[in-house]
Image 1 (cartoon, rainbow, N blue to C red):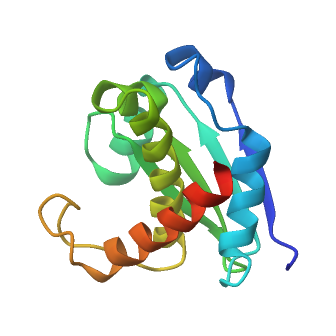
Image 2: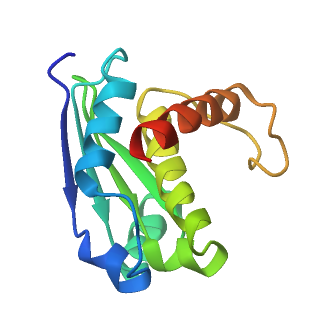
Length: 147
């Protein structure tokens, strides 16, 4: 494997909304490295945040004054990035195993944006878009690694 560096911050926010979260954060980190070490990315920070904070970021960077599930940012040209995920927002739509799967999906989704992929519609509206197909293929691998 390459030298891909992964850090995860504020894991307590996941456990606050879903105390039975069953995936270890070490497995999330190890699985991420296994999946993305072949991609052109060197470092990633996965940051769990409260809905107020992600709403501020969404407003500042996308002019949308509302919370969202995930935002990602390129930090520099060396393919380093940060993924902000709001567990509270995710939990409103996904509980139990679906919550765990959605957290993994959002980590992949944010990473694909950092790698330059984009989509024009939501996954529900346009599941055949290239980015979503790659995302779902990677999610299957990620879930196997983390189970």
